[in-house]
Length: 183
Image 1 (cartoon, rainbow, N blue to C red):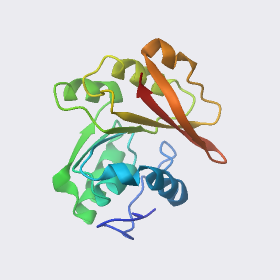
Image 2 (cartoon, one colour; image 1 turned 180 degrees about the vertical axis):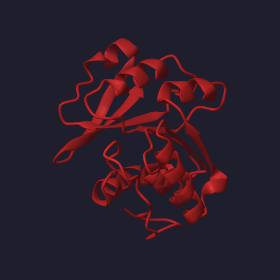
Image 3 (cartoon, rainbow, N blue to C red; image 1 turned 135 degrees about the horizontal axis):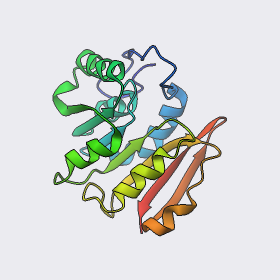
């Protein structure tokens, strides 16, 4: 896994040596950031279920002002910190080791994020738990884009009840990115 573009371009990132994480492939990451590129500069980026931190690090490398990383796995957090140090992006980052909703609660009162990316374990309903929290959170406003990396089977029919909408979906061979915003 490597940084695709920006000031840390081509640097190889460590990955977590466990089956509990599945790093987003370089190809999928490149596709995602090609869609986001016009909006990344100077943004605030949140990477939930961050694993090795590759998505948030890519955002920082491409010009995000700030990235917050959260993962509940101790080895993942150490990997994120090592990758941030190696890429020299640590000064623009905050890293939390805790469950996603606990991290969101601790961030309340700070400015909303421009992008909230989450890659939770597939088919466990964790994305719904986080989206339900975000529906009432000050960390998300009408301009915030939530991107969920999920299995192809993941449904988002409940979004209307949260006053959110799935406005774009990009499907790959084994998973998809769902783009969600408030309505």
